Each structure stands twice: as structure tokens, then as C-alpha cells.
Length: 453
Ligand code: PHE
Image 1 (tube, rainbow, N blue to C red):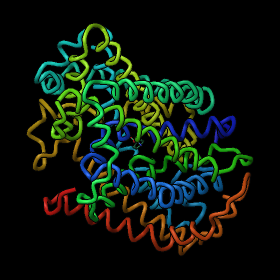
Image 2: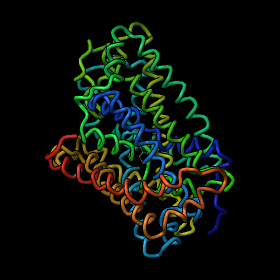
Image 3: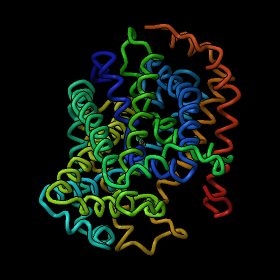
Image 4: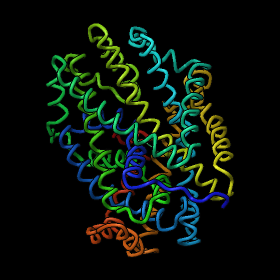
């Protein structure tokens, strides 16, 4: 290897960077509507229970693998057991698929921030503004290039001077903005109804799908089974406790998701007069409904809240895209021994080429689709609903039955106490694999329209 392996300077740097990866678009636009749809408080309880058991166990596993081997996914699995090299390859494919389309959406966010900053709130609140924008050819591509450019620049600066520094600035700002906007949103007229809708458990909506939806969201949100946490773990110093770091990351991720709900749901309820259907699903909430909500606020207030909101979303998206790009860069760097500069340039160009079809999939290439899935949706589905659960399942089998949990428990005990050994073993060997199979089955059934989550 031509360059010495980089590392985070200490625990805070590591936790904020990993939390930056975990907190992303999923926390802000997906978590709130899933919670609303699946019985409010009951979904929140299920999610928290899963996060502290299942989520923490899987995240600890990956970070421990990364730190133990000091390598990114492919090298890490190969050095633990040559037969499992394919698992490293499988996990590394996930960020390669996600980074380009995630950056396309990151470009949309950047565009909306620019529109709000330049006083275009009235335009952004028009019907069909969003559809009109994403179906163009040139403009979304330019914003996509800007977003990928910023990501690549940060990754170019390296682990400590790039990723860690940016995370240490962006993550605290993100917390302040999320909590601040949530408080503002809860003070809007008629918002209380939304708060209650979000927090009150509605047991009639509880079913197996509640658990599956929470579980699917958890995977995506904690950036599990895509090599990211292995890569970040490989940059972690030995004197830092993995288990206490993971608890903090989980708290961060779940906390921001929770506040995002308090930010989005009451505001939409206030605007729509308590109509829960207005919450909608997916990008429409963020790019169509919320701009209308902001525009309904009198005076410059709407512009200010809108700017702060899209700034917050941009920070969330950037810290996630950085982790995706760093994972790809790290795999290539480890494999070919290239310099960081050269690897970043190659990944930058590759990401642009792979992202173009997703960007064009709403206009020029909109005829390429499967059912109602656009090109972007197809990539999202392949990575998150198929490859990721398969990789997670094989990881559990590998750690549970081939490598044996003990080998990782040793790593987890370095740098701090690790008391949940029993639970860790039971999770990895028995509970997690069963859940993962259920998630995989449900997403496949959902894709075929047989089941509705
Ligand atoms: N965890 C991020 C979110 O909640 C998404 C993400 C996925 C980030 C994959 C990095 C990698 O939005």
C-alpha cells in the first residue's frame, strides 16, 4: 500500500462521522411517514426496541470486523476467511449502486436550497414545480454534478482532515436545526393534532408489517451491510470503545429520526387542516408538500424556515454520501494501491456516469421503467431490498457459525467494557437471520404487488 492507513483522531470524530452516515435522507423523509402510516407511537416503540437490540448488534459486528482487520470490506472478509471474499464484494457493490442515485437526490436538495436562498419560495410551492424540474435534462444533471463535486472534494481531503472535520461541523448544526424547526413546527396553529397523531400508539395499525417496516427502515438508516461501517471501523483507533460508540451512533440516528417526525408531521397537519393523506409518501413530501407548507407561513418566515430546512437536509445527505464515496474509494485504494487523489478522481467520474441514467429517468429516459418504478427506484430496490438483506444474512451466518461470535467479542472488548455478550451471540446466530429472511421475503412480495408495506 502506498499511503499509511488513515484514522479518525478519536472517539468523537468517529462517532460523528458514523452518525453522519446513518443520519440521512431516510431519517427525514422516510421515517416520519412510515411512523405515521404504521400506528405512530407503536411504530416508534418497535423501532427503538429493534434499534437497541438488532441494530446495535449488527453495527457492532461490522465495526469490529473493520477494526480487527484494518481493511475495507473485500480485504476484511478475505483476511478473515478466503472463502468469504465474495461477501466483501457483495457488500461493496451496495455503495457503488447507491452513491450515484443518492447524489441525484442530493442534487435536488442542493437546488431547492438555492431556490429558497434566492427568494424563489413562491415558485417552489407551485403545483408541478418539482415534476417540471426533475423531468428536465440539463438542470438536474448540473445540480447532481455540484453535489458529487462537493462530496468528492471532502473525501479527497481524507479521513481526518476531510470527513472528520466536516462531520464535526455539520452534525452539531444538524441537531440544532432539527430540534429548532421541530419546536417551530409544533407551535404552528393546529399542529398539536399532528403531534398526537405521531406519538399516540394506534394498536389497530399494529401487525407483522409494522415490525417489518421498522426493520427495513432500521437497516437503511443505520447504513448496515454495505461495507460502510467496516470501512469506518478500519479507521478507528484501538483505544476507543466500539460498544459505547455504537450506542451513541444509534441514539443519534434514532433521535434525529424522531425529531424529524416532530418537524414534518405537525407542520403538514397544520397546513392541511389535519389531513393525514397530505403526508404522502417519498420525495413528494419533501419537495412538494413542505415547500407549500413553508410558503403558507407569513412574511419572510417561510423563506427562513425553508432555507434552514433544506440546509439541514443537505448536511444530512452530504455526510451520508461522503460515507458512501469513502467506502468505494477505500475498497479501490486497498485493492489497487492507488493514491487517494487518483482513486477519488476515478470514483468521481464513475459516479457521474452511473448517476446519469437515474437523473434522466424522470424525463428523457422515463420510458425505461418496471411498473411504476423509475430507473432510480430500480437501483434503490436492487441495493436496499435485495442485495443488502442478502449480504446481512450471509454476514450473520459467517459471524455466527464460521468465524464464531467469540472472535469479534474479543475485538469488542478492546478499548472498553462489553457486557452484552450473550445477547450479541443470540442476535447474530438466531434472531437476526430470521428477521432478515422475513424482510427479504416481504420486499420481494411487495415488489410483485402481493403485499403492501
Ligand atoms: N443511512 C442513510 C439514511 O438514513 C442512508 C444511507 C444509505 C447512507 C446508504 C449511506 C449509505 O438516509
